[in-house]
Image (cartoon, rainbow, N blue to C red; front, side, top):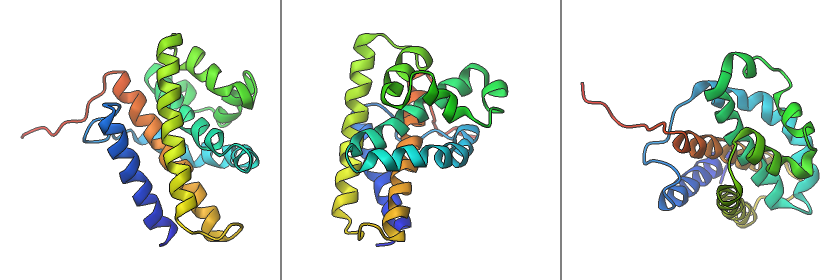
Length: 179
């Protein structure tokens, strides 16, 4: 299996899972501003994510889903300002540090109370565990270019699913319109 095929598999699995939890709609949202921000955010996140992956794979994968949620929230709030920030990931991370980034994003950016924060944390944790299990079962040889690309594919899909979850939470719905 190629990393691209693996990414498609991760996408389909996370979509089915989140759909079963009513966290996303059947048709995933399209938000090019947030989706395109991934290249910059992913590149900035990679050193932190890779460092954490060995001992804390769920954190490495989960934090990027929280980031996708936060970026979607910032898109809704004031994308002209936030979209222009070249160091958006660093600003999000450095507000409280990498280890407390989930709490910061939930409390200050996504702006949820304790109950919703616990529910979202559980959902993100489940997504991270599913994705990590799929990565481990995929059989990519550790330390290879293919394994690295597969890890990036996991991060990318977690980010995009975070965006989709948050857009639905904010009331954005993707439905087919009849002409």
